[in-house]
Length: 140
Image (cartoon, rainbow, N blue to C red; front, side, top):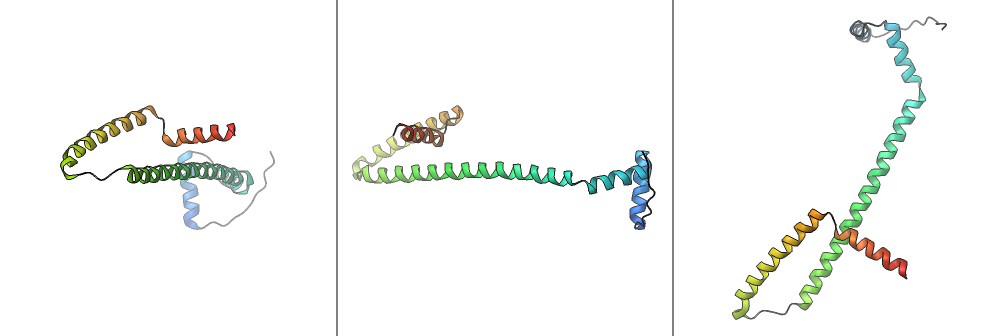
């Protein structure tokens, strides 16, 4: 391959770093300068980096959109539950309060157990609701 001589002036510190790198790698300084220039002048490197960053940003955007949807479903489910609970729960007389509190603690323990089983199974309410809504939409 034909080579052409190019003369360039470098900052003294940069020239020292170049010489040190060439000595460490045991290669001529010309090879390091050629590789650096080729990398700098190559448009492919920057375009590849930009494409990779764009793909990552797209993936992150989709993940955030799924999280927002799941959070919205969870908030709506909780709001509906609270609304129905407040509507359907009658006030408790003072003489029945201890028994009601004991029953409430028992139900809460059952709720925590059911939640632990669901989380261990990997099924989420958001996925179930999403599947049910999709199935209802398709049947209409």
